[in-house]
View (cartoon, helix red, strand yellow):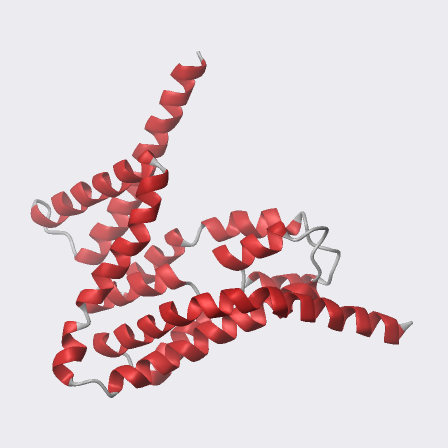
Amino acid sequence: METILATKKLSSFRQGAQAGISIAIGYMPIALTFGLLAKTTGLTLSETVMMSMIVFAGASQYIALNLLSLGTGVFEIVLTTFILNIRHFLMSASLNEKAESDALWKKALYAFGITDETFSVAAMKEGNVSASYMFGLITLSYGSWVVNSGIGHLVGARLPQSLQESMSVALYAMFIGLLVPALKKQRKTIWLAGLAAVVNSVLLLLFHMSKGWAIVIATLLAAVIVQYIAKESEGKHDA
């Protein structure tokens, strides 16, 4: 019986690993770019790899680099990345409805590896998902992100100093690349981005607030206002 159970777990792990191959490949260029930008921002190889190991969230890590380059404090960086990743609570709760009954520590462990991509693959899988499947899925994607972050840093260290300094512009290009697809799908995103930019500018220019806190407050305030307006608009439409 134990042999059959072990074989079943191994089979589920392999299925998860196979499903994670495409994610691992997709993470490669993004992680390489992150490692390269981390080098130009001033992070060491160990710091870059450690950030990818502990955070494992692309957009949050890119924003953290930007905040670091602005000299933002640790608390503001942690708070900003927390706000960005609040959606992971919802994804984890949703996936838990589809998950097989497993030990709580196993669920807590693979919950760390839930990203937009791993959640999408797991959510679209037919039937329930087991801990073995999730570990297989996350092992490849997580490994690709961490390893390629380190490789990107090593590659960046070998570039001419002038090119390393100019690569900081790529950080803003990456933000634009993340924002534009969302702008095309939802008009609400346009209002959110625009309002956040206006509030951030007002806080910086008129109130002389620190850049880190200006970003945090602008993000929260814009999200609350846009969501409130959207709900009010839906309520009037239903009426």
